Amino acid sequence: MATDYDNFARFYDLEYRNVKDDLEFYRQFAMRSESPILELGCGTGRVLTHLARSGFRVTGIDLSHPMLDIARQRIAGDTRLERHIHIEEADMRSFTLRTRFRMAFCAINSFMHLLTTEDQVACLSAVHHHLVPGGLLIVDLFNPDLALMLEGGGRVTLERLLVDTVGPTIVTKMVSAWVDRASQVNHVTYLYDEMGNKGELKRTVASISQRYLYRYEMELLLQRTRFPLEHVYGSYELDDYGPDSLKMIFVARRE
Image 1 (cartoon, rainbow, N blue to C red):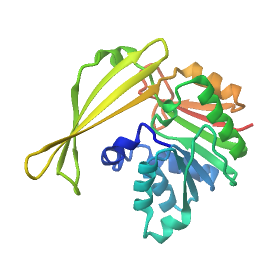
Image 2 (image 1 turned 90 degrees about the vertical axis):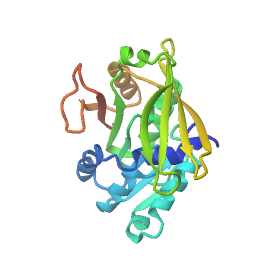
Image 3 (image 1 turned 135 degrees about the horizontal axis):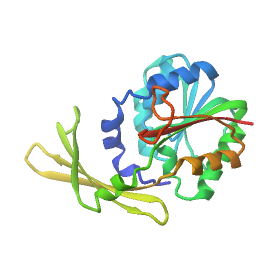
């Protein structure tokens, strides 16, 4: 099944492959929970591989075949990673696995790709089914700043330059976004420009939609799906969530 991420899996990996801010956060919770561990929306395998190198057995699911291809390439040939990681193309709303996990997590806003309450409940219910009693669930969301999201107003802005050591050296990333306040959905279009060896310009356009959630909205979803809340953190350093927090990281336990 095609997904919004298929068209720019390579660029996503270029941008996120070296992000390390949350890796120790997940490793510490994995040490509390122990294996096996489930990652929802594992993408190109950034967190999966870190946990596997730390000795944990991890399963990752994602609906994007191109993303998982990159994850498999990252793992291929490394005996330790191949032994500790299982990857499966599956929908986080309706997956069925044989394993029962001690911890599940959804990193860096991946949960926001579920655009309806029905999809969100379906996902959490599926996770509940796959966790052992008392199993840990972590969901990492950004703290919505509506003024900041509305600031772009559909304008195209330069966001960053990405370095690709395989293809063209520099990839220019531009972004345009607009917010549907009625449905709480942020619609984002990415434009990636690459200059070829002969000066030709190649542009890749990819669009995604993300539904932002507020704190008590997420808490009600967890309550509805029988995940008693343990804590809400505002950072990977375990700061308490507050009005100026950039993140809302929900830690809950399966009943």
